[in-house]
Image (cartoon, rainbow, N blue to C red; front, side):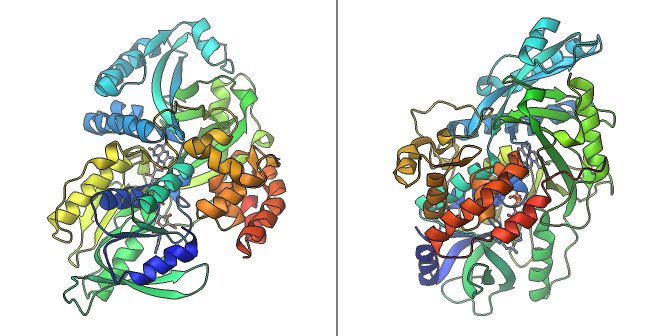
Length: 527
Ligand SMILES: Cc1cc2nc3c(=O)[nH]c(=O)nc-3n(C[C@H](O)[C@H](O)[C@H](O)COP(=O)(O)OP(=O)(O)OC[C@H]3O[C@@H](n4cnc5c(N)ncnc54)[C@H](O)[C@@H]3O)c2cc1C
């Protein structure tokens, strides 16, 4: 459906069973689960699908090796099962990935080897491959970029990797295909307890701003789920205030995570690298992704909650320094091609202020006295299981009638085909990311017109026609990950993308705004 079709459908529906606010991993997961149970659902996303934290993750489908170290067995076991579920429903956007933990001390191989054997056991039949102890030569063969000096071997284990922004998009499109209404660029400004609760049972009135047209739209819903990530507290407070309830306590304590992207030459091969303990106790990943290598991440408490957080100087230095300790080629600031930053929605309750490493990575669901259900925390890997918990909370609170679920575990997302095997996300991006829609993609004009970093004119047209894309940012940051791979090249590609988008939508595609945004993804050379 075009945006006009989606808006016409919105205008026709007098009341929805469920309005989900926030179109990241969490909100989209909840919406798909509810639609597949037969509820009428609208998703309202103030920016683009996945435009918040959900496009800025490390892109790992993982049980969480470090949660294992913390003894959080149930979290690890659940995430390992969910890892398998995502690999199954979106094989075009997710793949198993081998990791190597190099050993530079005698005790590391037996110690980490044992822990990772337990990881295999917890995965059970959802396991992706066996943990192996590697000799020095085997570790070097797997990771040719590894520092050789002092290397004593390593441990190889398996996890998964995915394209987070395109998975969010696939969820949104699957919601639409299943009868739901996903709308991006729709900001919920007010969420009020309905004054006229009549026969339709609507509990909430929502006041929404269409950020593309500037129009204000009102709609009604029986149940509302607040899945606005690190921003959940603002909406809870506004809605409590309008229901004359006491202001709720802050739920989220955000933590910033920085990633930098460098050339694949720093770490060739198809294995990822995990440093289990850096100087300050964090883990560090180096992950081959889309023809480049992602290095990260950091864990820095952040009180303000900007849409586009900036990396702090010390975070960049930390990543370069720690990666430099395990990679054979020296890394410098000028080697960075892109820097991007995400905010983790960690659950604040009882957490030690200022130390976000110690806060819970599990999700939390809160039902307010006015019936608003808020969900936050968790991780991408477990979005599907979180959604089931949210639906249960809606039933427990009596805001939706109970209906059985579980369909999301095997429900293939748009683009997935039963015949498709996993494609490499390590290599440069290409048509394979479209899965079963590749033929349809090629029908768009310009399939042979390359725009850079694997993007073609046809892909831009396809995104405008079928993937809710409107702006240059939508294309170059999320439909295609150019900005996340190489900010300078993305800037060069932008004018041509803008031209194609304008010819598709006849709207201003926001070229200037993109060029300003892209500056933040370029490392500032302070040397
Ligand atoms: C650095 C980092 C690395 C990570 N790595 C991994 C990883 O490798 N694997 C993994 O499984 N997890 C990872 N995670 C965790 C994972 O990314 C998050 O848990 C997940 O993306 C959170 O999704 P969300 O939908 O809750 O939040 P978001 O994606 O932020 O979505 C919330 C949405 O709500 C919208 N919104 C806000 N206010 C309004 C409003 N008033 N009206 C309408 N919409 C609104 C926002 O625009 C936003 O899009 C990582 C997180 C970070 C920060």
